Image 1 (cartoon, rainbow, N blue to C red):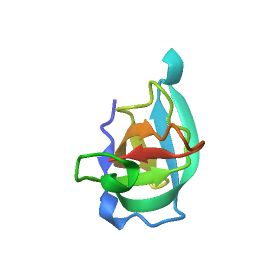
Image 2 (spheres, rainbow, N blue to C red):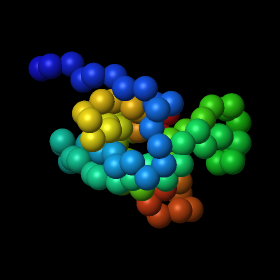
Image 3 (tube, one colour):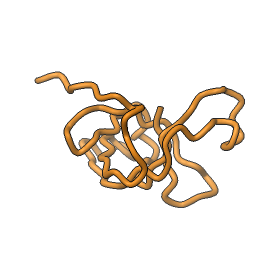
Length: 95
């Protein structure tokens, strides 16, 4: 395996296409495509106590995708898929 190249998450822009990799619901090697909906979304806006910023995407992030990479179309890892918002369909977040 060739290691994935790390990108700089601070350089991504709203509207850029991204790919989320993972194993949702134990379905191995799943890939979903989406766009960056927001960058540096404060955790406080999401009801989280941690003062951390998140990348918001509409790429499907489901149970099992957490921990998988969020990848730019240049093939660089720009985040780690973390969670989806339970009240909003199509709202996934990466750190």
